[in-house]
Length: 95
Image 1: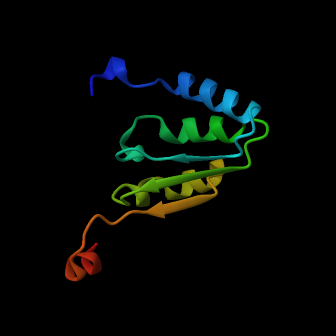
Image 2: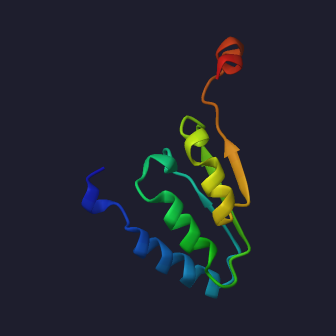
């Protein structure tokens, strides 16, 4: 997807704030692999500071989780879901 078609962090923060005002209480960061996006930890930190937002979750394939796990925990990510894209038992164990 061309970069200019991707929402900026500021646009996403505004959208989440509007949704929280309308009653949304939980947000999940997903969509491809959120950890490859530059500045994801700072974004998660700002997201977590939105008044009324009770839970922030993240779905990842886990490849970059070792690099970001501590920072994500410290900024307040509540839940991490690791998605292993395989149906092969042997491959699942190696992942």
